[in-house]
Image (cartoon, rainbow, N blue to C red):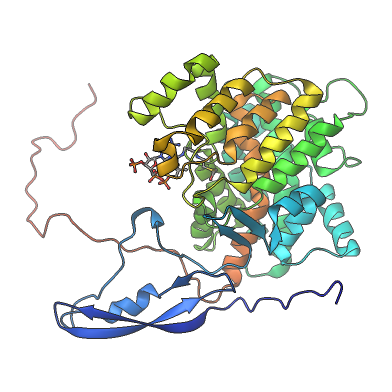
Length: 454
Ligand code: CMC
């Protein structure tokens, strides 16, 4: 009894039955295996098992057609578990609520990568190594100074992470565990520095170097906000809030950006380039960019009394979507959104209520009681309230997704390494179903193939 640990999962898929498929074209029946993951794991069949289904030997064979991967498992993973109907999120088996309350972001980053919580000496070394590598090459400063004053920080961030790849050419030795180790440490260490430098560039402020006496989040806040004071002292509620928000955003299984990182990484490129691809995917308004769009939407609504009209426009397809609502996987309240809403209350108690909170609360109430949203199972997602907290910490709206990227780097890296260690994985290369012309002879419509520019 007591502190007994459950047996570690095997990480393998088990055959739990067979599925018979009858092809009406040939009257032939095929048996394919049904595979299952862990105790709560979903079931699937191997798409390659369908290839045997054909009407003649020279036919290619049956594929599955799944635009936007609505029902396709692209990998097996032991990192993050989501039950979208019950609103459950766990990293390596640990409920997100417990991690947010009791853990630190760097402990969670270790957990995501290694599968178990770190022992004290492991944690001490991990924190030391990440702290030690926070500085970036001085040329990165020159690189960032090349951006216009109004460049979006996510564009800068994406380019800066890609540029880091050129500073660490040895990072391409992805099959060498030591090389992977240092690349992972460098990326986790330097993301806050890059993010803060992007912020300072936007503001026209001098870059602030990392202060290695500070914790991960305190140091980040110092690089963002420090002015002439010799030592930056962050507001403890901001440090706590950021730590929790980083934990909540650390991983979310096979979302758009993580799938992008895995797909890019599957070409065996270095992790800096793969993570730059993740940042690019996260930038989109349907993904990480949604937290920014929530505040823009609230600003547009302007007043709580305009909420019903806005909701009607969303429903009528006239306006935009209700940003910060809906999720591909969650069909109930996003568990992260619950924690964020509570956190927002705590932050607002200290810094005062955000002026747009009333609009947000009204929107939420209106949507949760409206047939349109209820029938489609559209609930607030993690992005709905995060923007309000970030703004109360004085972060500008276009910087919100950068904060998401800093945190998600831990998940991207864990997923990237899991992909590399998975013997079943190869270069990602989906199939298509061709629907274009059959062969036709080339007959140009041009009379001048090299016209001069007018
Ligand atoms: N507002 C209004 N209607 C919506 C919304 C919304 N936010 N989200 C989905 N719908 C409707 C959609 O129009 C469709 O209606 P119908 O069946 O009549 O055509 C139905 O709900 C199903 O939506 P879907 O587009 O098929 O769902 P999806 O799984 O493809 O999209 C989503 C998921 C998150 C992209 C979408 O809900 C959305 O665009 N939400 C707003 C953007 C947002 O908040 N994104 C952050 C996601 S959470 C953090 C992250 O992963 O980055």
